[in-house]
Image (cartoon, rainbow, N blue to C red):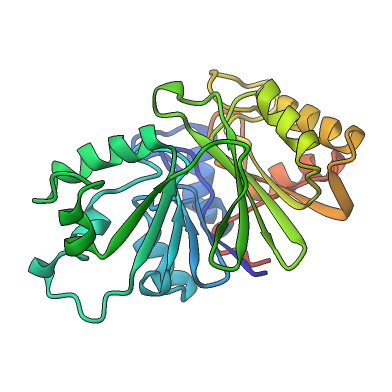
Length: 282
């Protein structure tokens, strides 16, 4: 399995467009790993998690073709995770050539919201209708939490997130050839149902990628901060959910309490985890 991080920022990117705090100013000076696009990841070359607003620029930078994507797992419909304009180029009006089929997965509530967003930018009125399947060459698959399902060669489980209950945001585990990744953004504290699912489904993670929106002792709610991130990893270890030599990575990083990549990495190292960055390949 090959993971490519297309983006590792929270909703506002990093640095923020209109912020002159010390962290944002420093990021503008140093660039590199301190420049973060909105969070998204590609597994191998065919599975995308979140069709966010920055995936095209990221795909150019990291030599990952979005045209090769066959499957998309959508965590939720917030605008930093779903940009409906990407779908426009799949319609006949844009004269796309050799458009491959796309399988789109998410909670029904998220997919319904995405359908509304798509209607605002195209003449596709219903993502669930036959018209959308014909025009976009896309198949829609509403998924239920804690019910394993197959996506191509991958074994997937969706877990509930408490991030936005109105669209039933999801977290995902992805397994290929006995190797399992947990992708956990966006979320605050993992729900009791999610912990129950981990145990009942005998989950065993080789890589954990978890929300780290806020830095140490910083918190605005709705997401994890560094302190609760560390608590969650400790619980995963105590519950024997982590493989030997499992890698733990933080993503969805904002300027609120999270310093430069180098400084934040030193902090994370003390607690046994890593800070992901745009373009990181594992």
